Length: 417
Ligand code: SF4
Image 1: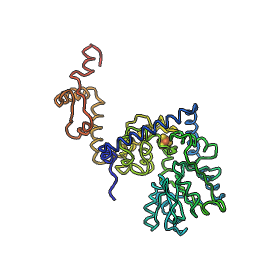
Image 2: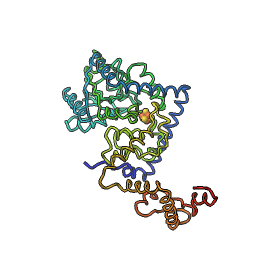
Image 3: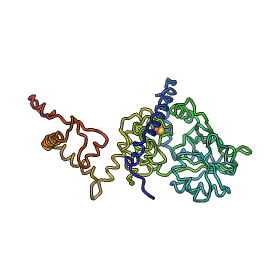
């Protein structure tokens, strides 16, 4: 399999596609306006954000107990819980359950957790056809098993909750014989009061007073809906992320997508360059956290940001995404330090550190750099720097430095440097 390219390379086709960029800008503007209107109706929005954050933090700090409580409640309600350490194990579990139910076809509405575990590929490899249910589609006639994601799970009652626009998950709660729900460990909340807080903040953040279709299901009810219910709980790097004091904030995410629509990078590139299943600012922190920074593609994601902070301002559970991005950038740089041959960037940074930590070296470099830069200038701008420095001028001009630096001007005034 060809490795996924780094973010900058993967973004090039989107950046060159004017129609796509216009469509992304229109979608983002519409989403921002809808969110702003929905949030403005609430006088206590800041308090609701703080409450959402508190719910998620409290849950994450007691995640083990909360999940055990959830398991007991699901089993008491007639369901079965399966634990999956990684994506492959989760996909295998779903395939085994679907095959045991005699399914040649399954209905599986799109969900990021299903994409995360590579479910389509696993089912297809096992000879099971996958149907997406669409807004106007009938439920596929041959599908006796449905596989869904979920937005929130309530440990107190074992209830699964899905928030949707089209009602694809809702259709899966009635027709099939067996229902398999796949969820990340962090999607649990302790009780119904916590659910109430997040239902409001997620819906408002997504630009609605309440999501158009809210479905809730608990275990198995005789004569009503699927006769079997399975919950597959996926770790896949989440407990490792939980150990990171700063990075664990990413597990607060409730998937409202508000941060995507305020991100100046996402607005220009769209979702593709981030790789599946998470895009935008949350994808830039979640993917490297769950999958590590060993691959060049994942290591490039924390740098796909201007650090403007707009994502942190809108997040309904107050995730400080820029703080996590900076921490992840540090991890990437630390991982590269041990290489026998430094990357060009690291070599440049080392040279810069050597120069900037000594006033004499700094002044000599400033004088030489100014002379050299002024020679390259045309019409008051430097349009192309030579060698690898040309990456900087690929997308922007460089202003010409003044002939007299601030330090020289300051000294000429008789001040001490
Ligand atoms: S990180 Fe983004 S998608 Fe997740 S809750 Fe915050 S704003 Fe929503």
